[in-house]
Image 1: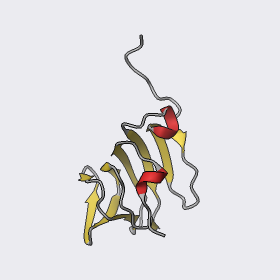
Image 2: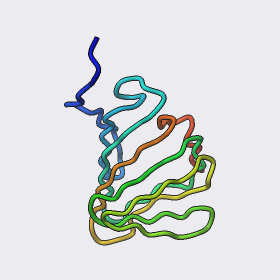
Image 3: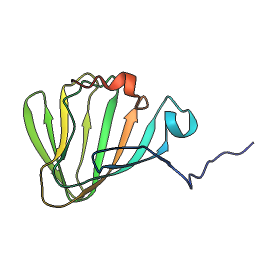
Length: 120
């Protein structure tokens, strides 16, 4: 029995907004529904619709800045900072800044398009 798994080829999620999403572990990569771990790069000017995910999401900023609007409160994280957003919180993620934002996102349980509950 092997007690580890090295990820050498993460699943690259197709996007049409310039955002790079590489899922290293999760539903799309290895079928794991317990946790998802993704490396992301959000280009300047990027944003997503508001959503109320059915999972906790942890974000760690590797480089740049990222804006969060959580239940009406605007928060900006910078390089080296992290945040936990509890499930069912209404949140919008964006990068209204002039440089790309590189970060890690960890979702518990794993991210799924059915559980993110994006607003139209």
